[in-house]
Amino acid sequence: MIPTEPQLKLEARLAAIEYMVAHTLSRLYLMLGVTDEQLDEMEVVSRGTLSRMTLAGVEPVVGDMFAGELQDNIERLTAITRDLRDLTMGKTHS
Image 1 (cartoon, rainbow, N blue to C red):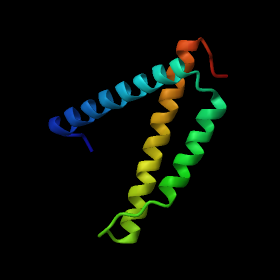
Image 2 (image 1 turned 90 degrees about the vertical axis):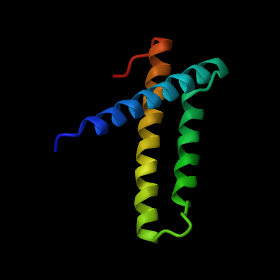
Image 3 (image 1 turned 180 degrees about the vertical axis):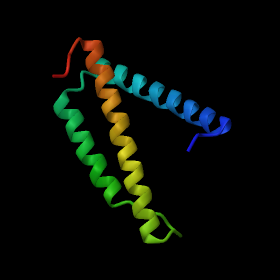
Image 4 (image 1 turned 90 degrees about the horizontal axis):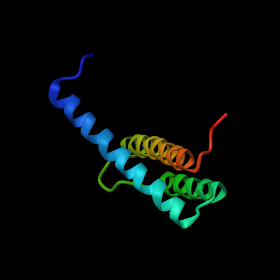
């Protein structure tokens, strides 16, 4: 399916926001000296928090689907943040 122009504009806007959030977090992590182990722990805590999340007034199956989508996107954004931080530090991934 080919996206409409408004859909494409919204996707581009969202991608720009996600990039800026990841960029800002990567710089913050660098300034604070956050280690890989600390980032790993933050991801574990985030996963646990989201797995227990419920949405009031929503069917449980819809809430579970939403939580899964949210978790997938947070993990993607976290990976981008980590990559940007590593790139700035001169690290390369093998």
